[in-house]
Length: 194
Image (cartoon, one colour):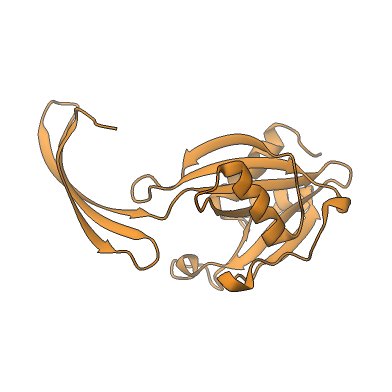
């Protein structure tokens, strides 16, 4: 992981209350060949996975709605976001994580998921890499009502809706979660559902 464009990296722990926030001071070699001293705060919350669940026969998708305090703090009036099912890897591999999260959050036990992307979500400040999946679901895969884990104080509303309604929400700005936008656009481009 060493780079010949970095040296003198100093790390100071600012918080480890839930995730890890560090201040990094370092020297960086610019494209012009000049060494500059820079400081960045880096938030390490681990990597995550998200999945767009779709049903070809019914032409539906399953999304979630939940409260997100950071969005409330940044002009999201009620703090509620419509999102794909997602979660932190918690030391699992991405496939196991998304299968677990799907059952916990939306109550469906899927077996086959397809990874379509992996990407950094906000590389200027977060270490998080998100693993993006799609998975087809059927009614017989439903094993519970979902809603998340009480032990994690999750309060997740499960939304099964026509794909066209999800696309309308995307096009009218009612879906503003980046993971959800990416996966809905993938579904549109690849014609997963009509």
